Length: 337
Image (cartoon, rainbow, N blue to C red):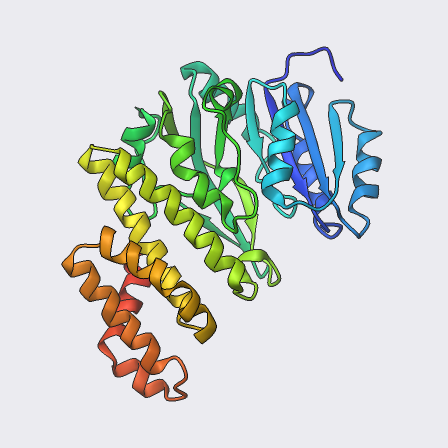
C-alpha cells in the first residue's frame, strides 16, 4: 500500500466479468489521481477467469486489495469492501462499467472535499448496443442541500438509486452504520432513503463521469422470479418505515411516489402467476389500502384490470385502444416510471 494519502476508496464487486473487467480497471488506473486511489476488488465467487485478471492487475497496482469470497451477491461484496476501505471518500463501481474520462475522479473529489460533502451526485452515460447516450439529472449545479431537502425536492428523473453516480464520505457512512441489504434485488433502491435521510451536505455536479453498460443478461433484464416479489416487499417495508417516521410534507410526498411506483411493480409481478397471486395478494392489498389515496387506488385498480384482461391477448389493436394502455404509455414516456 502506498504511503500517500488515500482520497477515494473504489469498491468493485466482481462476478464472472472476464469480458468487461479489464476495461473497468483500466479506466480506474488511468485516473490522474491514481496514486491517491485505493482499489478494492471483491471477487464474489466468480467461476470464469475474473480472479486471474484481478491478480494480474494487483502486480501492477500497489494500492489494490483483492477480497476473494464465496458467492454472496453484490450487497455483501460492497459491504465487505466498505468495511476495509481507508479513503476519505468511497466510490462504488460495477465490474462491467467504466469511468468516462481520466480526470473525472479528480474533479469529483475536489468538489466534494472543498464543501465537505457527505454525498456528491452526478450524471452518467448509458452504453447500449455500442452507442452512448447521456442521462441527465435535473438539479441546480453545486447547490448544497441537506439529505432531506434533496429528497423533498426530488422530481421525476432527478434522483437515482444507483450507487455509482454518488461519491460518498466514508466517515458519514460509518456514522449512519450504512450497509446494503443482502438478498434484495435492487438493493440500491432499498438503500436510497437510508443513504440520504441523515446527510447534512448533499450536492449535485453536472459531470458525466460514469459509463453504465446495459447488457442482455444482467439482473435488471433477466427473468422475473419469486425473489423479485420478496425483494419488492422488503423495499416497501423500508419505504413505509420512513413514510410513517417523517412529518415533512415534501419528503412524505417523495416517499409516497416511491411506494406507488413499487406497488405498480408488485402487482405486475404477483398477477403474472396465479401461485404468486394466492401467496402475496394479502400483503399487496395491505400496502395499497394503507398508503394510497382514493385516486391512486382507482388508478392502480384500473391498471390491475387492464393487466388481467390483456396480459394474454395477442391483439395489438385491443391493447392500443385501451385507455389504461395509453395512460401507461404516457407515464412511461413523460413521468419516467
